[in-house]
Amino acid sequence: MTRRVSFGSDNHSGVHPRVMEAIARANEGHVHAYGDDPWTAEAIGHLRSVLGDDIDVAFTFNGTGANVVTLATICRPWESVICAETAHINVDECAAPERIAGVKLVPVATPDGKLTPELVRPHLTGFGFQHHAQPRVISVSQASEYGTVYTVGELRALADLAHAHGMLLHVDGARFANAVAHLGCTPAAMLEDGGVDALSFGGTKNGMLLGEAVVLIHGAPADTLAFVRKQCGQLASKMRFVAAQFSAMLADGLWLETAAHANAMAARIAEGVQTLGVEVTQPVQANEVFALLPADRTPQLAERFGFYTWDTARGEVRLVTSWDTQPEDVDALVAAVREIIS
Image (tube, rainbow, N blue to C red):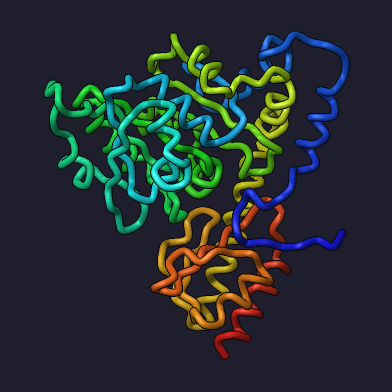
């Protein structure tokens, strides 16, 4: 089959060969189901070595599942979650957090996909008033849906605001690896110094077949986590095949290698199109590039390279790189952009 390159999503890419090998190695013999197996124990150990010892972990199938399980665990049904208007939990999860977790989402408009204390404060109202949903969580995407990355200081400012009101800070980390690679800090330091209480740790967008992890930190309420995961349909019976992938990614730093490569390919796109006079509308900090292209010629380009139009009115497109994006793929895209704007 001819290799087709897509810049539509990092979900379009295949599985890293080392992850496939790990799945194959786990496919031997019989072990107990539902996570009572050596592969799951090993993967949790790797997560603790990377993220810190004081965490509780529950593996799930996908990102929506991880977010729903996290929010259902740390929130009660009369509580609310403040998030960016563009957040995945608000836009792309078919209201699953609201229907399944039972929480109210409070979306906040942002210029770059990132919340700030100034944007959040007006929504911190109604505490103790029985007619209002009670603010419980500030949820941020790291990296954001615009490919922008919160610094550790920016996370800490939001965490301090949340904690001052008896709330928690949740990080939707579908692209957490890309954010860590961009900042160059240790993930444990980001979580500790950033004051993060809960993390949805992404794997699928970063080279895995499937699988994410719910990570609760610093004693965030975890006593119901196992029951919530089961009730939400996110408990894998053959858990070893999810867990083995995490071990393959985490054991020797593969997860950061793949993310750093994807980030570098996004930077290469941005540099290439900017030399052609194309406006890049957001800082390129992770593996996404937002750019303005001629609306009448974009469909032809999108048909070839598989990307999406983010804002039709502006002609803004989103280009996403993956662990397996090659420099020649980027150069072919930039050359095609040159053709349509010349």
